[in-house]
Length: 429
Image (tube, rainbow, N blue to C red; front, top):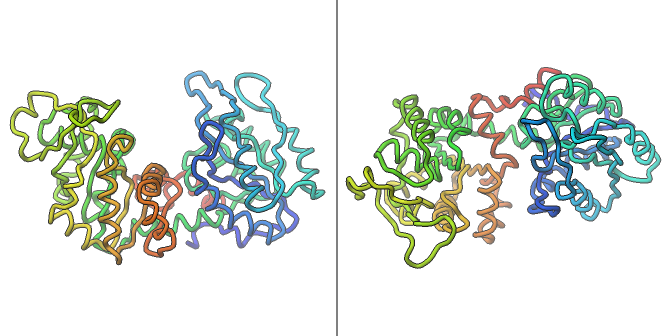
């Protein structure tokens, strides 16, 4: 980890420290899961320990319209619940600078930061927390506006720390800012990168499990991951597209584009396709709106006959738990020394059983290093198997990443240092 500048090596005494965190946990004005906030607290405490005065910032939601450049500012995507959570948990007083937007293109006036900094220096508050970074003009979109926003931020700080592993895109507050301030990686960022490296230099054999609803955003990572792993298991729409491409199945909700991408993945990975461990039992349902006693069934992909090639078989909404009782599948899980999981097996709102069976089978291997990435993956694990999840949080053989997209982006780049904000830290060093 000596390639990346460490915040512990920075002189923070009396300095204003601008800290980018990934606290994107607010849904409709309430904190859905504080895990990402809790993970950044050691960085905040070390800033205090080293005498720094912190300005925290994070994005919340997606208020930026790429087509028009306009930004929707809503209290439902405010950072206020985050500030209240930190204040209560740490018994510290936070202050949100009164920055306001002058038009529909976001906040461009940062001058209220000056008065807020006076309150921070005088001890009237313990930390500042900027409004949602995506409310500021230039945070997204790139170009001169992003540089202008980054430079304006830098005028109010002495040091920059990036602790937002999950915010992997090159935005002003994660990327451009490193041009204007001495920049360092926070403690969480370094911890995430150390564990990410275990995917690139794994204890073997390594089993990778990836699922999702958008194949177009994951095909690059899949192509790289099938080279890295010893075994690969697919789930969700990704698996449905793979089944359609390989067996000719017509599955509701799987687009022609998804099938073409799956065919491309199979062509590009033809030398490694034997690494894919197929899950033979799938759940077909007539509806994505409800689950009744008689609107779903379980099929074996090897016994579906010619009808599946000519008739649409409905929505495939899960991998059936029976798939995780197949001897070959059990052996793959039990023999793995590393397991990387970025997967919810199906549409868990209606059919969580496949994911639950998978989590239990993973847990049955006590020796494997288990690396979990992706918010839905971790939230489903926590929600449906709370006792196992609670034990896993204190088990050194488990690690829960704070960002699934960041992991896949790094895998696609074939380096733990591949995400652009991390490259910016290294470059500016």
